[in-house]
Length: 261
Image (cartoon, rainbow, N blue to C red; front, side, top):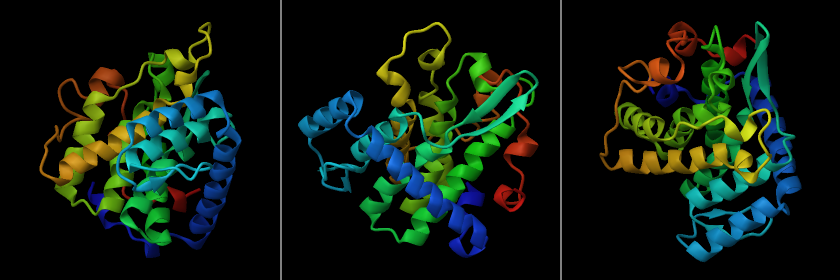
């Protein structure tokens, strides 16, 4: 939370800014490709029926809805074709990784809600990439999917930081938002499990994390509290989800990882 609160656009290397712009364009193309899918159209119909504040835009339709709903639908569209980027590496015979661009629709939806500058939105996206990659790096023996969890399980911890940055949460508020979101939204691995039938839920796992991450931040902004030790505490992420396989030195390293790659 301290790292997120303190990072500024001017701290980012020029090549990181350039690459982030490329990733945003690639992600928008993926969302356009998934827009007409049955899954995306179903979600749009539900969101339209629910109504809500006119804060953010659903890509493709121009529908105005709440930032939570826009993050959900746009995230579903982006993920549908399974063509978005991937961060992955081997842990022995296993693969650890995730699709970091899934955080972009949430950043865009909240950025639109807040009328954020392009620099602020871009900074929040870089932070999301940085922290989500650290979560993957922190598993040294067995990655999330091999433990029965979906890789989207990191979303409830990452999205409150992406969103919290754009909402201007202070360190304590962001800590609470991470605790609120991370406690309640761990995801089973069955949408991607070998031998299981493909279904639309695979494409909405991380969008749900984005939607709930926004809610967690809005609650924390008004004083709602969550467990500050959600990662390292008794029955927290490290013990309950990772079985103790969580290298906190990798998760909390101080330097910007994108400077090393």
